[in-house]
Amino acid sequence: MRDNGIPEAQDGLIGLDWFAGLAKEALGRLVSVRDQECAVVGQDHLDHFLRVLREARSIDPAVLLAEMIARQIDPAAVACLYVPAAARALGAGWAADDVSFIDVTLGTEKLHAVVRRVDELLAEVRPVTGPSALVLVAEADQHTLGAMVLALELRLAGFSAMVRVAPMPRDLTQLLSANRFDLAVVSVGCTAALDSAVGLVRTLRLLSRKDEMCILVGGAIPVEDALLLKETGADRVVRHVSALMSEYDACRDGRQPDRDRKRSQGSIVQALLKGDGS
Image (cartoon, rainbow, N blue to C red; front, side, top):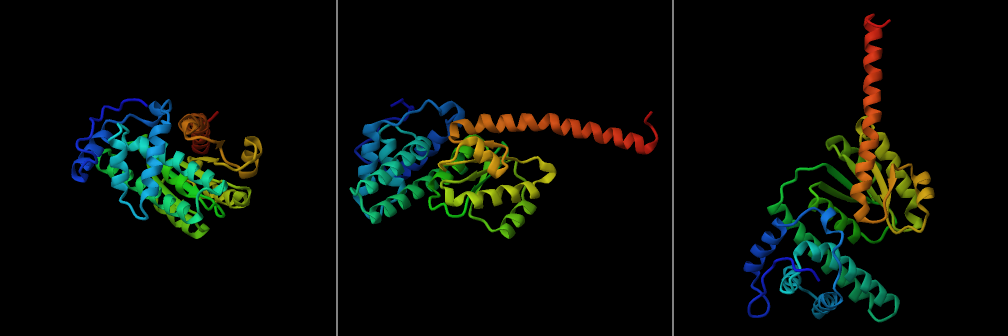
């Protein structure tokens, strides 16, 4: 595992007051998500993370983070790499009948708490300077942890990010009337959620101002990208967060010439109306 420049903890588990300051410092040093794509999950660190996760029925997320910081893992790596890996391990354990459903549920709640805690720390050290993103979870999707991690990764990249789970059309209408978003990501994890995803993309398209919002769709749904794009009407399909930024850039760059063309056409129309055209 790479060295993140975090000093060794003293006397076992570090004090939580000291931990909070260290976590903020570590987050303050982070570069964007684009520069962390090469990061890997260390199996030994993951095994330790899972052991701590399973130790108690109730545990402060700060304790989980402190345990990992003591192993030279920064808070963002815990939330963006080790939380998803732990969630997959819990799911695999349940499928193999090695972990009870109760333990999976409790473990998932703890993982949610870790992501929220890192998000809180990030808000204190990193001002939002980039575009705004809306992450929507389609109806019938039972898992929202991935969407929360995605939102955190977007914030690490400088975006402002908001998450909504299975919003009703009225709620989405109110949200978009009060907020402007440069990017929307519709997460769809199963075929049962496809109809909901189609409805969400359609609503976003209708409500986006001047059609300037880039709409991406993705997730674990077992549908080929070309078919998913055709069915939903989104601008791009993205399957992994590492590709999200480049897809957003491509979508944005593709829209700019179109906006320039429309602006030029509008100028010509105005000139003709004024009698300035030939």
